Every structure is written in C-alpha cells, then in structure tokens.
Image 1 (cartoon, rainbow, N blue to C red):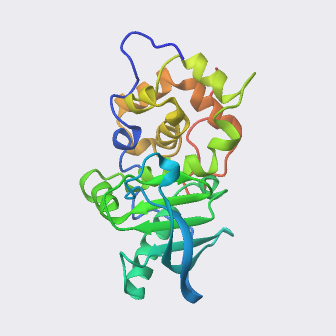
Image 2 (image 1 turned 60 degrees about the vertical axis):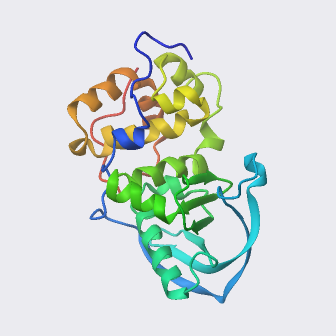
Length: 255
C-alpha cells in the first residue's frame, strides 16, 4: 500500500497504543476449567524457545497437563500447560483458568476458530494461528503489569487464529485489501515492517474506537477514525459478534 508523508498512523504496535481498553473487571464468558482424564498426555505444540529457525521447525511433541476450558456462549477449548515448566497440576490449572478467563473477555468472534491454548513459562512473544493460541507466562506478566495490555495482546493473536484466513487476503470490491488500499497508510510501525500483521494491528484500534471509546484518548480516536476509516468500515460491515463487549458506539461507518 502507498505511504503518505509522515509514515504509519501509530508509531508502535497498537496493543500498546490502545492498552487497557479491556480490563480484568470486565464481563467474561469464561465458565470453568476441568482436568481431562487422563490429566496429562502428549501434544505437538509450538514453542519459540526452540532455537532452531525457521519457525516451522519450532514444533515439538511434549508432555502437557490437559484441561477443557468452557465458555458460556458454547465454546470449549483444550488448554495444554507445559508439564516441564509447571510440574504441579494445581498450579497448571490456575494458569489455565487465568488465561481462559481473560480470553472470555474478548469478542466472541475471536474464539471462532480457537481449539487449543498452549501455556509455557518464559518471556517469548505470544503466538496465534493454526487454530491455537500460544502464551508465555512471564511475557504475560510484562503485558499485564508493565504495559497494561494483556487482553489486547491476546486479541491481536486471536485475530491471526480466527480472522486472518477469511479476511486478510480477500480481493475485490468491499474486501480487506481494498480497505487497506483506500486508507493508503500502514496502521503501525509493526505492520509497516510486516504487512501480514495489518489485520491484527487494525482490529485492536477497532475495538477501542467502536466498543470502548471511553477508554481511548481523543488523539488516538481521531487518528483511527481519520486515517484508517476504510478498515473500520470493513469491520463494521462484517457484523461480527463482539459480545461480551458493550454495544458498538455510533452507526456503521460509510466511506
């Protein structure tokens, strides 16, 4: 896409710009976590800590604690907690509950393709895709405590899991690619470097300006609504199920 003078709209990843728009006090659709029988087993999981590039080689079959996380809107997700990192089942269950509860605060559409959540220790970046979500607990603490963006980071990755395949590469009239072209600008420095991140980088600002505008600065609202309005209009037109977020603020964008 062409770049206007001044470069990307936001000078860092949007999870940081729109931090704390979803909070631990917000409604969650999480119901409970229950141990599977047997309580542990072997699973093929992705782990960035495997220092063998490229990414397709960072998969390994390991022993994990196994739980089912259920949500009140009908979803069930298998939670796999790395047993080498967390050797106590009770601790593993606490981790599973924490992150399943957080995921339950996110829009329902982001769980559409989610089948597994894998939880490791460590400070690697989260990951999304392949019907899964990969979480590192030390990195989660940094997101939650230092940057106040745990939910936003989870949302970003779940866009890769549940939305990319159906939207990211669409072409033609009223497509995502058309919206990118019409806006003519990268959303963030992150998506400028890696355009594959554009949909995920755009969805977090969308949540902010459409569903939690009271938690977004006027400056950032004006930037989003002024410079990525075609992307926002695209999301509006999809009529995604965004529960348990509050109702959308304002009518659908028309561009």
